[in-house]
Amino acid sequence: MIEGFFYALILPSMKSHTANTSEHPIGLKITKAKGVFVFDERGKAYYDLIAGVGVNNLGHHLQEINEAVSAQMKLHSHVMVYGEYEQNVLIRFSQKLTSLLPPSLHKIYPVNSGTEANEAAIKLCRKATGRTQIISFKGAYHGNTLGSMSISWNETKKAPFRPLLPDVYFIELNNFENLNEITHKTAGVFLETIQGDAGVRIPEKTYLQKLKQRCEEVGALLVLDEIQCGYGRTGHFSAFESFGVVPDMLTLGKALGAGLPIGALVASQHLLKHFESKPALGHITTFGGNPVVAAAALAGLQYLTKNNIVSKVEEKGQLFQNLLSSHQAVKGFRRKGLMLAIDLKNPDVVTQCIEKCRAEGVLLFWFLSLPSSFRISPPLTITDDEIQRSCNIILSVFDQLD
Ligand SMILES: Cc1ncc(COP(=O)(O)O)c(C=O)c1O
Image (tube, rainbow, N blue to C red; front, top):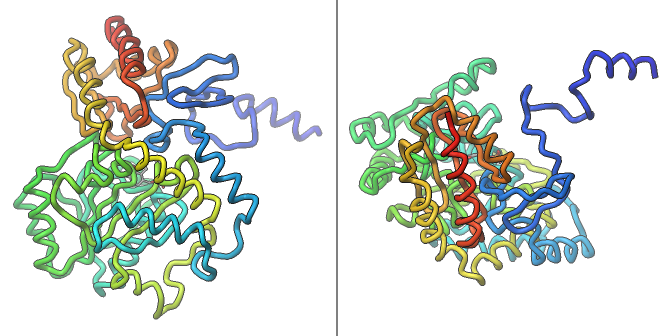
């Protein structure tokens, strides 16, 4: 009792028993969400142009997902660590997911998050090739656990946690000469097909093709991370479709769970068999393939395909671009589908812009590694009218910036 009083005095900012991730969390008190909107405790609606950072691609609180989750809960939730039992819903989800991918990506290894999918991919690259070297890219973000952080670029975020994985090297996107750094020593090359946190950086088509060719020449495995840019975000189910390249491994997460936590490593049986023996259980994951999450993910993919959502993404992205890109506050605009980065002429007003928009009812978000820019990644289901109205708010905030 006395102890509680003491902590209440010295830690007035810790209102609850959940840890903060920074000294200045946004702190919106969310009570419900529906479609493109989230609502705070006063009932104020916000256009969610971030979608939980690329997660709620189908919008919030979709009836089909809720029904699939409760139907599965009536049957069973967790029954065993991943891989030991056959679970009908997981089989149906993996069939549906692989039906949307090229034939060589025919098996999924389900995990709990994007970062775990990349951890598993790093391990698989090493084991399948017998090599240790990983090549990644300047600007990359692959997650925040030690392995995926090791292959991410932002040194400020990494420095306090060193030493990280050895034998990791970074090359420059779209630099053809740098491809020679990929050699017979390289186990795997990791690339976000569209770099997200670097500010929506898009590879040249020929570059990605040369990258794949170089990997094949030296026997390195190409891993494309589509945790953020996959699931229809770029106007194709997989972002790599528009580059004419198929990776050896694909990592997925975020939107794949339709709002529930998920990750997946997708590859061929030829590669994934390396997790089966020497040692057996090469990637143990208790909750990977959780049946309730799988039910949501299956319902999400069914909703996405049945409603042809991906086919309308490019048009909607173009509408955002038409409405926002020519304002005088804007210096640069990068976009693929509904994955947008907007550079402001005055980098010092990015936070002001994001905070004013929030006050006016539009949620935007920063890039961790690009302070002069903000991101837009709305639900893919956003309507033209919602785009128009939310952009009107952003434009009026642009007008007021210092
Ligand atoms: C490209 C990319 N890879 C990996 C991750 C890590 O995913 P998670 O935070 O779900 O572990 C993220 C998260 O933002 C991401 O954008």
